[in-house]
Image (cartoon, rainbow, N blue to C red; front, top):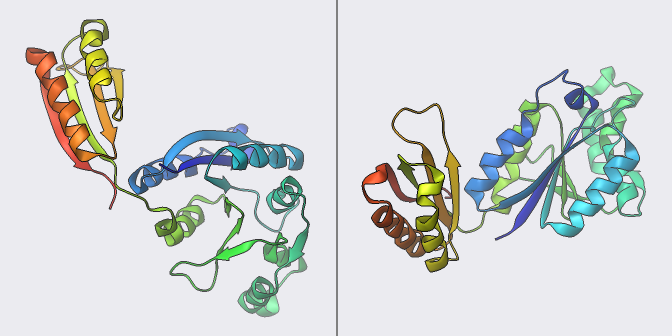
Length: 247
């Protein structure tokens, strides 16, 4: 199962000026695509911090998605930082420069040309949008911080990351976690390929624990689900049978 990390870049997120939206969106997208999200990091608009964080995450995970720090102003340092992370330089990409000039025309301000700056050796990743690509360097995908643009650009290239579907089941149990711990241990031991999560709930009236079961092998998830329902018995309030979340 491919792994991923998200690096959210922006003083405005850490200061609370804006609520972070992009990681919340990408969590659901990656899950549906069958990508295992392992890390979310929020860091300031600091070149050295960005470089160190991206370099570390790129070495650990299959995909890294950055959000923010891409634009024409002084605090947009992501491109420079990623170039620093991998020991390369920033260049003005000719195709992007041409498109930036065409887009702004007579209204072009010199700083807008920074939108054509990329780490040397970067790949321009096109989806359905054949005009404005996503810039990628190795396994790092550099996305804008504005939520509407972030979503649009990721959705445009998301099929690039699609893998096998993930099957998920849920069991709602009216018992304390301690009362079902042995049942969960037995299911985990019998079906080690299935990821099982136990989540206590305190506001719901009809159940106290939500157990989720997920995995790539539909038959294994179904078998684990059946075993848990059998062992929990009358404690089960309701359940959601195994279903695929990826397409």
